[in-house]
Image (tube, rainbow, N blue to C red; front, side, top):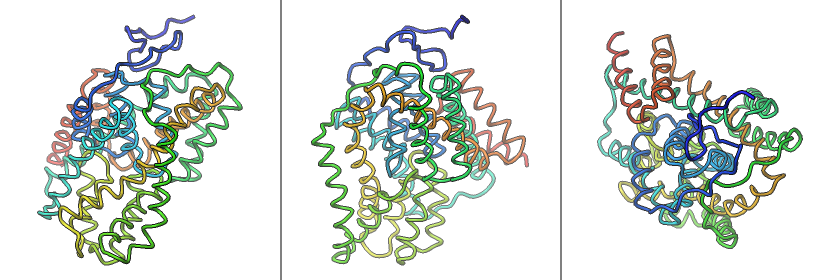
Length: 421
């Protein structure tokens, strides 16, 4: 048998491939909320490129570098959050903080990952400053290009560990085919469902032992209460939204966060319908804020902070930004809390693990499809852009450069490309 990749002490291959020749370790000891806050604050300031790229940053920082959980457990969590409405990367971050340091860790992860972009967009709302000129445009282009490298690194690493045989590789390709025929959020959910079914049919090996992550400190009773609160708000807010403008804002942003799969760009049409068609925000202001949102790290859902700040009727300013921001994130977190205790139990059963192996392979296919569109097709327009993307990929995978360093280099490279024509 050919020699496998070199292993280090924790059973991880160089590049994050899990060593399945022996059981995974029980996982690291619990951390502290301050530790979680520091880690996610760094991620919130450096995670450019949208939700797919965010998942790549999370994997590199928390799975590969820090070993907070295993590759398999991380992929399971990503698959779960892809099933649920809301911002997938923020849901993954919330769950990682919860598993690391309990409820304070969950809120620390949300605060750290969300605060940088929310503050930037709030400041943009107050100053109405626009990025212009070759330096600004070039830096934005560089940030788009580095997302290509980040997503490619995630696809490469996850494919090596989650699609090690022909059956799961076929499932990943099938997921790409599903998205080619049915693009968008429904295609992603359908691909994961079909992947799980194919895993049950095609799975041959014994299920991978669960482990490598901390137990989720959420009881079924708490999960049931979270689901009840979600359904109650979803049904009650439309009935009371006419009583006060603050309730109308809460209803609009809660509904936008509750009914969107895929997060990010998918939520924008709903937000436009809620705030532009209602006359709360002008179309030009909406588009200006959307353009600024592409330039900041962290979740695109923080666009709500900008919209809340520029609302015509009160509440606006700080109050409007906070209300809109909390309302759009809340439904996704409630659904995640409702699902987490049952997900952790389900994934320890052999047949459920086999199905999850198929779903994980489908996630790889989904990430691969996203690598092509919109990440690659949006960022790379010529051979110069492709060269910069390739250089960033080599820095990440070959030289093991920290992602934030590569982001800065890519932004500088984008400026250089713009200044040289």
